Image: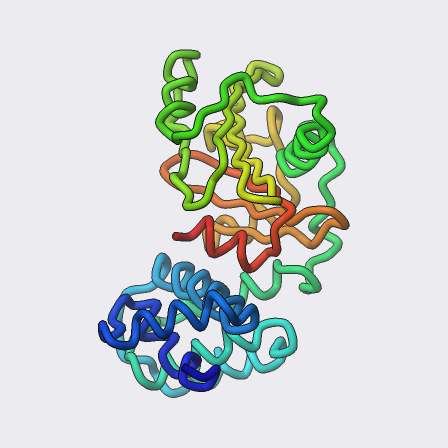
Length: 274
């Protein structure tokens, strides 16, 4: 299967509707082609974000033009997202009512690396969640911070949080090719923090989780303004790139999570949204 053939089938594959005779060829091509695999991962993430924020409706022509025009302005960094959205808007009749979908897509672009809100992305306060997550990740990589519990299975570390009185539901994802899972918990000025670590080949993935209620007035924990705005609109925030890691923040079921990893951002997003 060629790259062009794979690109034509991306939408069908993401929807889980590939024909049986195409599925094996498609997967083998992705395993061998880094470029097509990256596009597939990016489009999977984009579709997840859009689907989480919109209900099905016929796309008004003026809204289609508005979204595509905004994406074309950012095409260099998000060409895969633009190609998928153009196909979705014209061929699959999904997307939005009024401005919700435009906000979900365009806000993700604005708050991603190189976006237009750089002055609002700073996170240097000691109680800033992103700052704490990056510091913890550095300590993990240096060996100064170690998981309390390590297991080959996600259930092995999920039970740790229950036994140690963490009063919110900590999300421990079951990941393919994960060598081991780690867990620990800590207290910061009375705030319970859950720490989940995944070792996947050469990559280390660290996820910091807290009860979302701890962010209500900003007195206990903080986030930069850009993160707050993006989370309010899309439930997701991609922090501007750091020299040695990528940072993704999201909220779900009353829990705020921050993932820090050495893996590439498109791969990280695909992993977190599956």
